[in-house]
Structure formats: structure tokens, C-alpha cells
Image (cartoon, rainbow, N blue to C red; front, side, top):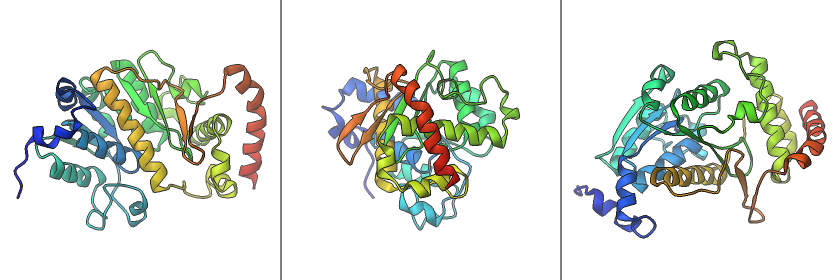
Length: 291
């Protein structure tokens, strides 16, 4: 078996980052909450980039349906807890890494984790989990890297002082305790996010709208595709790297979409334009849901 050497592992990183910056990547703590699709892809990139202080959390076990997009899902890991299996594969890349695994009770450890990990990757697809992360990060001065539920790869970064998604997208959860969030709140928040995606990107041109309507109505599981999921995870990893080494980033709390079909970046519309178009988009979304 080969003998591991961190310097040898990361030698080809130098040039993209300096040796000093590589040392910063090695020692910067990152919390990846949800290591399935986008979170798992981001985690894989971070480990190979040389991040060595990680906390990872998940609720679920890998399933066969995850094999289409989740990088740590293999036939060997199906049936295993996602965070445990992901940790074990990460340690086969960098055995010197310190990786803490959290389970269903991850939120009980959140204050402790966020006291040191000021970079948070939201790899969850659950409203309540996201609220816990964002509210906890705000209280601790952390930054959350996230992506929209979109057919196009996307990324946005919410720094301390930025409006959280529930504020920016006008979720019904604003000012509401976590314990009081209802299924109706979940449904409305999902529609608010879908409205933002439709309004500010060309996503509608790159997906089956009939199936998307069934997803929005809760009649079908979300669609997911490896190129989109993995690309999104890579965009998230770049943002974590920028934060860890203090490089500026052009990504803000509104973020952007990467149109890989007609290659260019799509950024959110100016506020006045969005205000005019939003009612039209909302009606179109309602028609999609109604079928």
C-alpha cells in the first residue's frame, strides 16, 4: 500500500493556490450538512483540494436511486449511512483528515460546530434543516454556501449580515420558531424558491415542465441529474476555497445560474424588472402545478 504524504498529494495544487494558501485549506474547518448530491460532490472536491478539518452530517442511508448522481454512492455503500460511508471514502483519499460524523441529532451539535466552522455548505433539501443552518450561522458569524433547486447549476453565498433566503425570498417562516413550521410553510417556501428560479434564469427551457409541475405540487420526487448536481457541488467548493483563503468572490447572497446549454452566466434581474415580471411568473407556476 502506498504511503500517504499530504505535501505529495497536494503538490499539483500549487500554482492554483500558493503554499501558504494550501496550508490554510488544510487547517480551515468546514461543515458540510448533507453529503448526498451537491453536498457530496462539494465534499469530494474539498477533500481532494486538501481540506482536512471537516464535520459532515446526514440523516439517510445510500439507496440504489442515489447511484445516478451522488459521488459517494456505490454498490458497496448502498444501505450504509451516508455520512459514515462518505467519511470512510474521504479517509481513503486523505487518511490524515479529521472528519467528524453527525447523525439525525446533528442540530443538537450545531452551536458547537459553528463555534469553529465558519464555512457551512448546505447540502440538505429540507426547509427546516436550512432554517437551522442559516439562523445558526447568523448567530455565530458564519457564512453559508448554497444552491437553488434548479435544473441549471447555481450557487449563492450568504455572508454575515446578508439577508437569509427566508427573508430574501419571503418565506412564511420569517419570525416563526423552528418548531412551529408547518407542511403548508414547506410547500409555500418551495414555491417561492421555484418562482425565483423561473424568474431569474432560463431554467424553464431546460426541463420537462409537466414533470416540474408535478414536483412543485408534491406529486413527484425531485428530478436530479449527475452533470447538474456535480457541477453545482464544484461551484460550491470553489466558494469554500475562496472563503478559506480570503480571496474575493463575485458570488453574493442572490447568486447566479450557470447555463451549460448556451454557455453563459445568468444573474438575477434588477429589482424593478423582477417586480413587474413576478406576478406573471407566479401565475405560470400556478398553472404548472394545476396541470
